[in-house]
Image 1: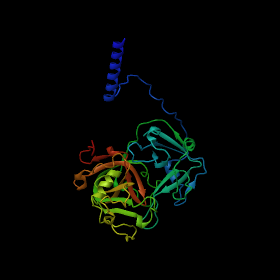
Image 2: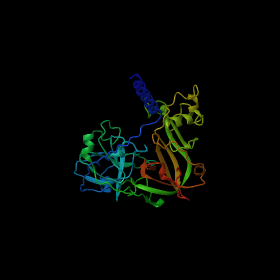
Image 3: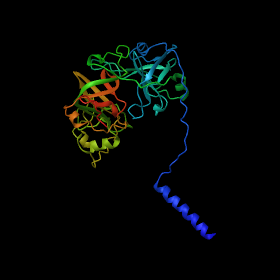
Image 4: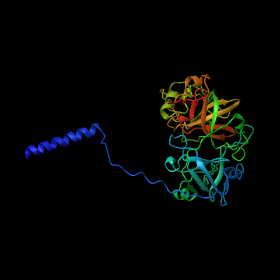
Length: 364
């Protein structure tokens, strides 16, 4: 009996050791999850018609039984879109501001989505008045009780499910190749340029030798105060990536490449330079995160800002040296938007960058 017990304990010990070294292999087969229920509604308006109902700087709580429909053209899985997705029809595209992350699980690229707009808010993000400003993007969301923005996110699941209706699944949206003459002007909205808010491809873009990053000394203080702002702009300042994670930004700033940048904004640069904040070498006076980075390119005579989130999974990828040197052009696929009248382009993933001459991806 004692001999049998020793053998059993030895066998258990072997099983214990093997489980530490190798993951168990499961051979059970599970059924695929049933697809989420879908509906079919009849749109009352196109996206362009809804956008035309917006009046600049006057958010509208929609009091009509308006239904729009479109195919999902974005995914938040790579992290470059956050708590929102774009839909598009033949007339234009529009952002739907959702209060959820991981939307790619519920709203698939190519899936038709209906938005029952009654009770929601039609507003704009990115408008700036004056000769150096212009229009932003008309979007659908909820009213913002703080008044800081014209729309806020649809936070409640009950509100989301009542207004954002899943339709039929379909093939992913195929981007349309557009010319420089198709690009929006600063005065355009989705009501006057059918490509705004849509997934398009821009060809033969050359690097513009300029990047833009807005940094803050302290997120807990007023982020609009000049004394709390640093603009990395009007040059590349050594920024060679599409965006920057916290780790990457720490590398940039501790290298000293930004030391001569002035602290401040809007002509109010009376707060010293970044190098003054060096301290022990870690620059303790600067927050080590960047919300987004814009890399500048030119399409003919038109400036294009390729804007990438600091939370994107591909933000730290290096822009190839031959592209940065202006030796090779690239084609980029993404959502065409305006911010303060300037063109901003937002990609879904690193797969949206390809060389113009070979049509091969920048990142294999």
